[in-house]
Image (cartoon, rainbow, N blue to C red; front, top):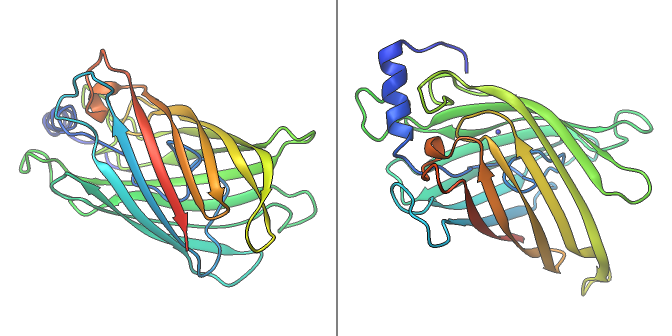
Length: 266
């Protein structure tokens, strides 16, 4: 959240497979649709996410996109260097397991005024077979991303930006051509401060938006709103649109879906 150009026949087979295979993000800490976020799970804190995507009464090519149930946890006990690892289960799908990891530093950690910086990988699937031999298609997207994040002055929220590069055999356009690099941007802003039962403050509403370039399986973005019921329990909802709908698994006429995402820290 990569290297070798495929032969023409294999590339077309991959494209044909992904045109029929629903796709959903299997990600580390995200802003909305993409991991365009400088946040990393704190040490010892587990994050449970349940993400659903609905075609809202329109036809998908093989049903709705799969539900993503993921667990992410922070594993480094340092203030200025943080790391998280995670695993996602996408169902229904033939090869449902994906892995992710991210390491980085928060704002002001490197020097006064420094941006947040992190390096990560996501959508590391377990199926590495060629689509020529496997009608379900391979799932090793192996997307590496480098992200920067910074708080905007005057209370305008936070901006996140970076680049990504994935497996050129799986990140392809609808014609099977390699489309495995691009950029990601994200923005979020909290509203309505509240206090938790332990007295700690949090924002009870957060507006979020992000976008990933590329006519591939992750290209697209969305705008939505988080409702934090406590500092550790939130619900996100809003639309997600795609740069190349047929690669994701929805019809060309249905360029967007509606997402609901439940998130719990414990």
